[in-house]
Length: 173
Image (cartoon, rainbow, N blue to C red; front, side, top):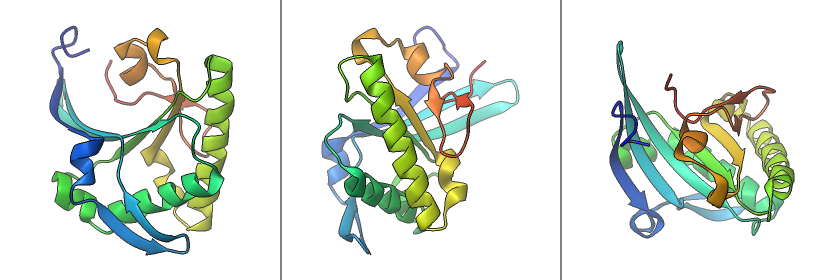
């Protein structure tokens, strides 16, 4: 993506292994929960008006988590950001949580799973009275082998909780 679009640049990438060092713990009604994402990417997009920073927390959903596990994760991500720990760790405020659903063997299976993830995310955000955090979460069903970088980052393939329309992961025209 960056080779074909010089206005998009990867500034930093942290893998799950790197993120597991010094990760954030919090106590919730679910018990002690840690925030360890699968990947974190810092992208910049240069526009005529300036540069946009994107701190993208990537969660790969392979269908192994049940509803309570997912809701615990949503709660932890919101608390992580609210606590200031996210800002302290990455030195930036903007956060986007890209939930990439690859649980099914095909698009139909991934779409069904993504709809569950969307519903569970909405339920947890409502329960913790943080519906305004919905715009942080972007949920996309995909088959990795069939997905181009443009489809992943630029195309409007993501659902946001409580919204009907789809959005892109980053704004790039």
